[in-house]
Image (cartoon, rainbow, N blue to C red; front, top):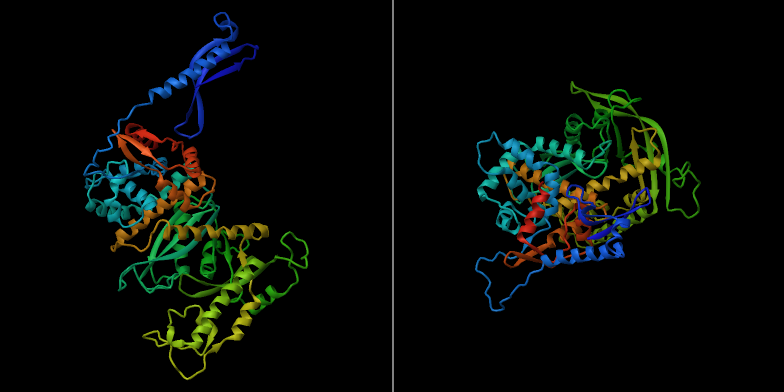
Length: 580
């Protein structure tokens, strides 16, 4: 409680006692009037110094409020632990629970399930799967076994969880669109730039099936995989995902996902950012349309220098035209250089009749060199060359899988097609010096092509660099959220698994956004996981974790994580407010 001394326009001073509190909706600190006192000149008739008097009154009111919260506990040091004691409970899940309800996911699931014949609560199951994915990732069985870790009434069976997965697969696309629309309304989004990438997830099975097929695994595993294409907005928030068979090429997933985003997500004109695995004539034409001078949608793609034409390579290596990035000539000792040009090139496009036609696209080509990237490329090659030398010295210790990467630098290397073992053909194994020399020419160089002819070069480079967000997103799903390996096998279960991971990831990104991007996903999840408590006595819960991150998370979402003890009713009140 504090005394508010307010000076009015007529010069008179008015007093009232106010109390600080936190707004439930915005999470911002506010104050409210708890006792009106009156004007000082009138109060002086009763009190010699009204301001000093009522400051003491406010202090006493604060002490009385605190005293009402004080209780005396008698601790029996000989008491036994009850047989069914459940250990600690997590309270950090209050934040993802709040976002879940801010996005109205509970309303969506409740409304959609009304016409269904099943009796289990899909909303309750979804909440368990999402908070478990964030705070204790693992199998669906693990999530169910740990359901008592939270202050929720998860009144359903393990079989209900797996039945619900079938239903979640059925509503997956509608739920993704609904989620995006609510993110846009509650948190804001920017789909003028859409980042796109593809990754894959392996399964612990021996034989491939209709969807889980052997393909080019990004971790070089031989297990069957499923491909995921993911679109993400300019702010790093996931928009839409789609699953593909493991043998589907990255470039073949592009039009399906981006087409869905353009059609169903109200994006308007978009500029798609992707790496060179996506850049094909068909994909470019799909985006820009048949009017190269006025493209329907745009692109910013990385472009292979080593795979480019001889004329393009010559342009890259020609020192003419490079500046320091600010339009100024290069110094003698520079760390970065860049140049650009607007040009045209022919692309091959597959038409509706299946035939290929040449189409002309006009684009800006940006080439830059970075000393940091150059050093990195040479360090990575040096590591591969050490392995290549070891391979040459003792080829019997390697096979096709273990020689991956280094084999490219070894001449006369052949493998047994069945076993993958290195064959002794009688040819001398040696380092491919010509390949090394050719690669070294382009160390540190990168190129980007874009349909946006008037976009400043610095903006083009910054826009492309944003692609690391989606790469980081995939790393988060595979490490922090432990999306792989996937423990379910039926396709509807698999897709439902990725749907829950997608929602969990969106919630995590929104937590990062709300806290200004200061903390990594790992730090946030570690913090939320450690905000735990145990039943000390008579439904009074004792907390033993608090740090800078928990304070900042609490401030951002209007949830107080600073108290050492809370009663069960107080905890349930906080969780109830999170759901309101």
